[in-house]
Image 1 (cartoon, rainbow, N blue to C red):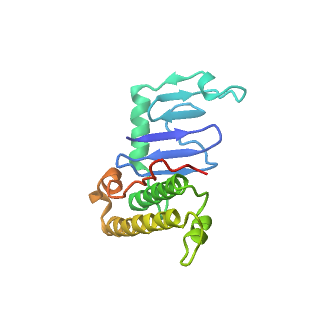
Image 2 (cartoon, one colour; image 1 turned 90 degrees about the horizontal axis):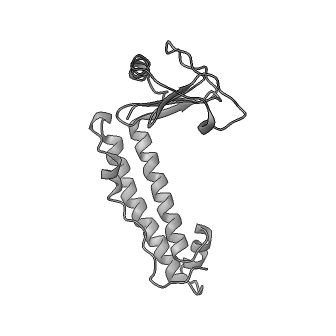
Image 3 (spheres, helix red, strand yellow; image 1 turned 120 degrees about the vertical axis):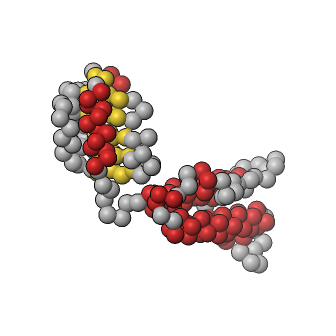
Length: 186
């Protein structure tokens, strides 16, 4: 699960064994004891010694990493510390918020709305909008998932990083949106 990626544009991405990931923009390449211009140590393990800006990554001349180079990368990852404010807790919370925002977007779409502003005026008390009941369903769903998310967030914040559960264990408590059967999308 460790990763170290250094791109031709000076972006450095590091991921620790516990899943904590961070990146830096416009940095010098890490000194690892071997030559490279681009390095990928993730799902593939390759280095590019001479980056050719005329062709895509797939067309670059790549070299496999040796065992010694892999050990140097692993040592660099082990010795790396995340920037201030970057923690596995915050990272998990952000991923859950992104997931909930995606769910809300799916709920809007499946109920025939384009955005939350439309839902707000269509579902308000006293509305005569023809789809007011659907708007209220979206708002009730949003209210429910954000209440659940608030409880999960409190649990994650109160947990030590080494006692956190996998992200899927938290995510499974957040209900996915359901649409209305045979409802035509506008």
